[in-house]
Length: 542
Picture 1 (cartoon, rainbow, N blue to C red):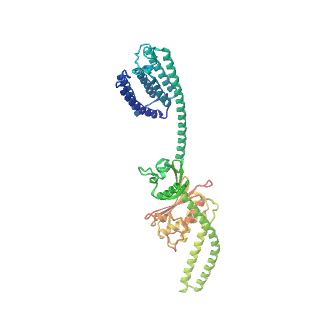
Picture 2: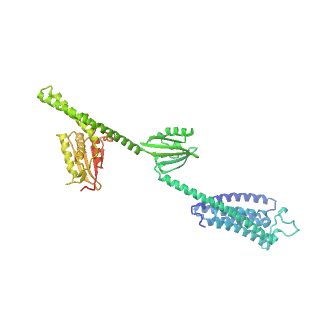
Picture 3: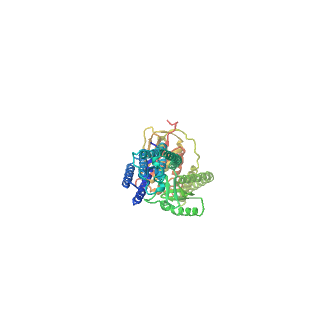
């Protein structure tokens, strides 16, 4: 009888306990009424004992429920006890003459609902067998026959005008057969309906499990709220994206404060007849994309964290603008650098003609510096437009670092020496050494400027299992979180206007990314700045 491995036996047992308590109370009331001078109940105390036994059995079943060890066998025993109680009640109130043998159908129908098919037929057979045994034992005189009492129309024949039903063996067999056939038909119909309902329930449960599995696998949060605004179901992603305060079950209670206004507006449009509404809002540093749809019985709410997507779109837009800037820069370099070179030559000739005479020489020197600075800005902007070239050849990374240090010394004469921490030989990486030395030179000049040329500035080289790493660290004042986050934005600079263009780090990142690497900045006020470049190993690298 291991019919129900999913715990439905306990569900049926709870239902049976409640149903039997109602039946016991009703039977007790009927017993009291029939015993009050009607004479219909010959042995009321015996009937009361039967009801007490049923009550005790119901208490035992309830105890089994609390311990969690209810089985189909225990349910079969309880229903068999009900059949026995009905048989005793019939015996005490007329036996086979009592037309209420139809009451056998109640435990039979219940067994068809809560028990397997074979056990349900067993209950029907038990009822018919007990009914037949009662009649035969009364017919044989083994059991006393209790007359129906003061209701003569319940008797088959008037008193003294022929045998009673319990004295007719043919009637007993016929009544038992009719009862058995009736109970078997009731069992068949009940079990058919119950099994179909169970099959539908299992299919619904399987569909629910599949839907729940899909909801659990979704990265988007999905929830459904009823027409009263109360939460019906939600997946784990929804609870993560829209965390609820304790006790919050209503839709607007679940929403963060930043979402409530647009959510209220969207709900209003749904109430006005819209089928679907979408909106985005920032909440707790995240960008949440929400979709609301009307559905039978309530509203479905889908929420997705699109913060990374929006940031990627912003980066893509920035890169697109840089590409447009590159096209402009290429033309700018061609149209501006040549005239600037001509102007610089003219200023130099004028300076030589002045022979160092004041006050002419000082303005001319200032003009040459400004022209050189302007040419550097134009060349830096043009570098942003440089298309990715060939990765070059395997090159010792330490040698490229030495070239970058020499270039930085040329641009920042008089600055403190750069300390180098690198293993002998160092890692070899496939790269375009001229481009990479330019990127590292930009990092070094930034570090030198951060310390006003007094140092310390340290360049470290090391090999890791998946990358070659270069670190440039300075002992400057460091940066706060807001300026550190903007260091790679073109034209953003923390230097005075005469010292920086805001293009050194963007150019360095562009070169590093062309080589498949990454660059990161770690800085905080009071502990300097460290820039880390990671270059992946190449298959052709030594």
